[in-house]
Image 1 (tube, one colour):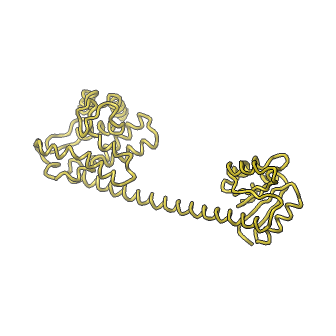
Image 2 (cartoon, one colour):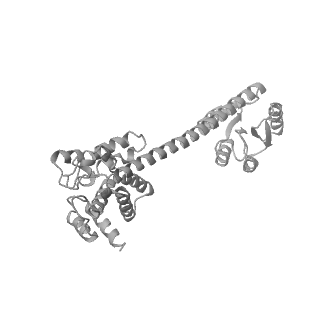
Image 3 (cartoon, rainbow, N blue to C red):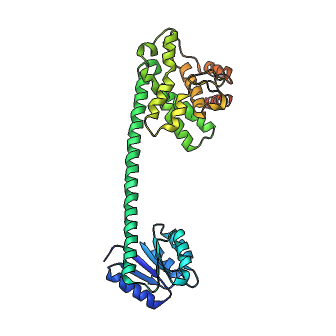
Length: 329
């Protein structure tokens, strides 16, 4: 017996019997019912591959029955049985999702061919869905591995100098606290977390002699440092799936008054994630030792952020950051 299950819905017992005989000869598993409500009850009990439905059923008509059964079994294939007078309705049924229609009286060979063709399409569709799902899972695993590699690389960059050890981790932590204060969505928060962990990945191109220099940078050295947001954005852009956080990484050193780099964006033109990371980045940098100075106390760092609201930092983000920090202590 074939693995496919077919339900026949027709109010004429003779037609039901004839259809069942033809299909059972082809080794299909067949159920027959005389009206829509019975068909719905059967659909709740068995998962049918295909339904042969008389378009002009009394009571619940064929189109209504198709809609109801499709809610129960979204992948159900429907073929309508119709007389000549209802061909226009049958064509409309196809527009609404039916696979095909067969006119009464039917030729057994034509009926079988139509059913075989429909079930083959259904099988191929199912196989394609499985292949796409498998591909999606594999792609997701590759993306997770790639993101993990980039995150490890970013952590390695931070570890090149003990003064910046765990810098990106701390910036991410502060940024996520701000995200909670702003009531950002789960999707926005996830992107912010990724951007926070990877915001300094472009520093891979900066020599250790510049990153760890104890004195003031020369103009040329400063120009090298200022390129790291663009380099980081280019690295992420090449991944093909981190494009949503590329602008956040590129613009995390922009200033609210437009005097930042690399593009001189100002105000709300700076991505929200960049504005959040800018405050978190500055606070973490000020409260950690650097080769050229000792770490600030938290209160002094918060005061610097207050003083620079509206120039370096978004005032709204500054306020949320300070309120969040003060709520911790």
